[in-house]
Image (cartoon, rainbow, N blue to C red; front, side, top):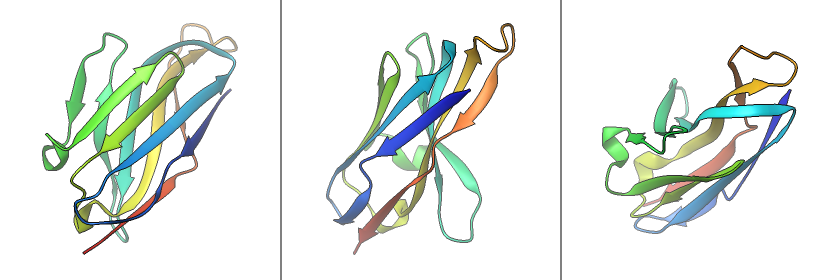
Length: 120
């Protein structure tokens, strides 16, 4: 299995910045995609940003130019600048990985979530 531990959420005023971190550990053979999702109150969980093992990245239109996703081995980050109240939500890290217990398969793992609140 793979464990994901997030850190870095909190309360910030509009226009401010936060950095989320996620560290993956466990019986990891390889990691494909690393991603951040966001779930606002009473809304579905949506993709915010993804970084692939090629280094390619993709962002939701609403965060382009403000958020940056990066990865370093088994850790990845979401730098959030120029935050807006609509960025408020629980942010979940997500990886698609192959474990040593299930070689040849790609499984999906989730972090516990980090609350980000942006006040106006």
